[in-house]
Image (cartoon, rainbow, N blue to C red; front, side, top):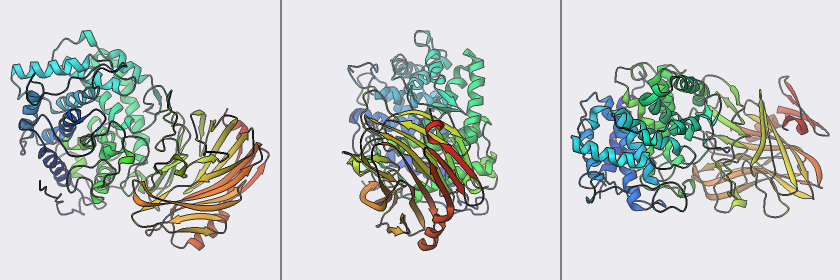
Length: 632
């Protein structure tokens, strides 16, 4: 099958001086992604048999997923066209709804089962039923109104089956909730599976500042952005009169969330590279558009479009959906290590959540006002999220956002492995965690004990964030406790470890990993290990206390940002008992490594007295931290 490549309209740098993108560019990308996916649709459009590696749920589920998730792109496109619908998308998806819910028909969809082991069938249809319900809500009568009474009844029957299922106790609770709310909004009796209690359970996971953990453990990621807030919005819109106080509370939480979330996008357009399901790409933009839709956002219309268009352009410039279907990866190429067992060929089209802005009319200020700078471009910032255990610091000179992670670990009962997308000490918008097949090869962002197989960070047992200081406590192995405190300033982090070990051990500290499509130059200078990409992006680490030597570790095919990866690292030793290890981390842009290395030497003066670390930053600020007391 021959597929057309994406054709981008001419840039408009008068209206959009930063990206050149306008509404026409968004429409062009949406239409191209839809046309490509539709070329794999069944005769009546219910099943999208997009080629690629199948998810664990199998090809039948994948084909349903292709329909449901492309509907998320089609829905705002239909609404934004004001009923004009030049592509006939409403008819396409209306026909697919009927064909997919016709019992015994050639395009019948799967019927999901309860999420209660042992499973007797597939649970994934619950998710896709929710995506369909969400899109049907957004489109109003544009699609639902095209169904005759018999069609509405059979679609409602299929949806009701999934609304009544037992969902996993995480963001999935909102999937059954949104299906139930949609049915209730259509006058259907849903009292047998009322979802109010499930929504209250999700709301109980609020950590503060509008951020939630995805379930009862420390699972903090983009599921805030592309499920929790958008699906709570839809639920409260449809049935919020059940609990007006809860709706008011969520609306305020969304507002608080939108004070910090947009600050986690780099000036290069990249979202922070952290957490699972990254193949959803532009879905990271859902709450940015939601802020414009609800009036709860804090960005100006021009800054909203600049941020969103910068991210869409970031992905299209790197080949996402340009030729052929969206791949299972981050950029254009397939990169399976970043996917999960549930990722199939239709999964990446959840990116449609990030096209919500097209539901706003063409004369809305987000489309008509001139682009303005986004947060990463407007000045250096440091902000902490104590509930998350996160401390972010960005610098407008290089437009890089860095995140120090002392709160998210994605550890659940029976999960033995550290997930590199959650447990690293450092993440950013310009670097990605190493995802080598062998755990011991993932050096970046980790402090490892090397008295056997490299230790894992393990579950975070306590955390604290105060000002420009954050810390956490964990147990990397039996007989060892690790307290870590990070102190940030500009592009720098002084990372301090207090290790209590029952035996002697070598230790290793990893910096950010720099990746490219060609080998990344690296080296040592004045005891600092560094890696520098051709465009000047540089990661470096300098031992200040408790380290003996530096090196740079290289890998291939271990990063979503390129086939070659270089990671600066430090090595030290502990004789057992209590030891302190302090390093200066740098992530930014450099022109001359020798000059920069000299700067690193004088950036921070550090002294250690027992468990107390004193950091004097060049410029006058002094921070004193007792590592044994900062985190209980």
